[in-house]
Length: 329
Image (cartoon, rainbow, N blue to C red; front, side, top):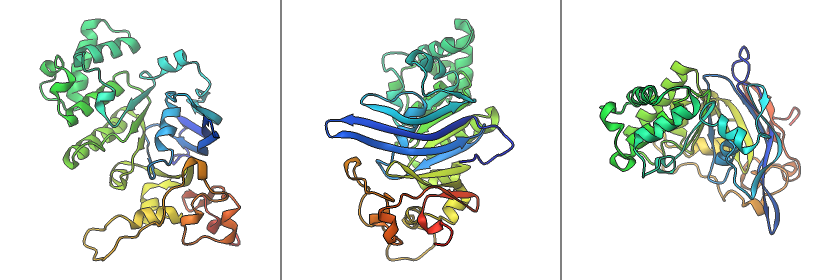
């Protein structure tokens, strides 16, 4: 799948990525042969219901998959070189320096026993050739950049002395302290109230604009996607249903699943007794149906949908995996 800017070489290339889990009941495929590209400075949103494989995809890219989960197929290339086959130590050195991460709960990224200064300075010195005084000064500048008031004083505080929104700002400072080229942001605004969400969104967009950082934003919130992203990838049951420019996917969704997601969002000023509802639930990994995984819930399903797996098809500026868009259908 092509990135939105054909004049820029892809920073990240994910090709036919599959993620599986070895269990007593056999091998369960949680992410099933997905492909996408990302160019510098681009924000790609990844959206879908819980269990769609969004977070697993981000975890695989950053090299943090835990057993029994493993990459079962495909390749992940960063700056033209494969990273899915790197050793743990090689991937650890890449994390932070070239690829950063922002998680939903800041407390999973911050050690409650250490001051913010110690955590930032240690991270900076791990990846940059700075002495302690220089690293501390950079840490203060980072805290100021992400909007922490009185950063020269707050840097000596502990995580519990910050609010949830301020802790998330500290995590963003940690993620960008070595100026990585890619940041994986997994539900970074979910636990925050709406006003703080807006501030974090502004920070992410500023990071891309000023530093050329590319971001994969994993979320279930279409409002955040619409406000933040350049493109959006819609996942269902471990597969990509649709990927394209955010305005097109939100304004003119192609895949019946995407249409259902968009229809479930209330429109300001619109009068409606009921929102659109997608009947049923996403299948468990043990029970993924053959053909198109969405066909048991799809109002447009045809007989072929239960046996033929749709491949991504170019449609306008998007790609959609649906038999409705095959030529002659």
